[in-house]
Image (tube, rainbow, N blue to C red; front, side, top):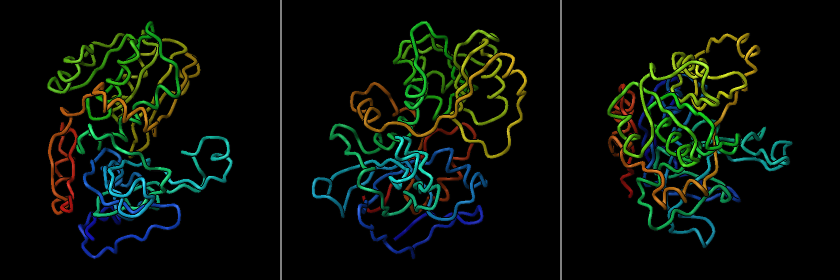
Length: 319
């Protein structure tokens, strides 16, 4: 089968990869469509020493697995867990000590004709949700994770820093809580997407220091972190949604003095994410920038790395 292979920070489109054999408890999924996200781009820059097929945002059709799933479209949670370690037993399985992670840690990913995942990771895609739209299930779930970690109220002043793919989804999901939300970014054309949904937007100069209860950093760069940090009032909460390829410098003393709560946030719940997409409460269509066939995956990555580009989707020729 074909697959986009990463090794030593170099991408290669290979055609000699064996179709995987699903072990007991796993399903073989024929990939239809997969999205390139910032984590994929960071992996090519050495964010984590991964070798294998990239990709973790996908929609596919089950070819081998339980009868109720065969020939049906699915999306999949990316953490394959052991179910036995202390984190799994305590209900924190996304931090399983023995986990593999689709296209990220010790498990080949979705930029290929086929992938394998545990059956328990798979979720059926509602018939009303187009395949390209359903590809956003994983990042929408990641955006929803914020609401799993902290309670949001209508009187909370919330800042989202970043108008890219993740920032847009975080903003749309947070807006559903009714909080007092402001999103800041650098690109007027991207902010317009949010303004059309009634969300307040602006540039960095729209942020008044020390006035927000919660800020969410979605840029993955030091400047974005600085804006999110200085926006917080004492005892505010800073949520980090981005992965950083390099080290981040910060003033730890001010975190102590202001009693800031710092929260890392990543994978989230798939079922409510699919429900939001089915109900069209989150609009991902404006985020789709381009489609490429898998055979042009390296060109797709080059385009995805272009400044200002939003979501690039890979379509498998077996679709």
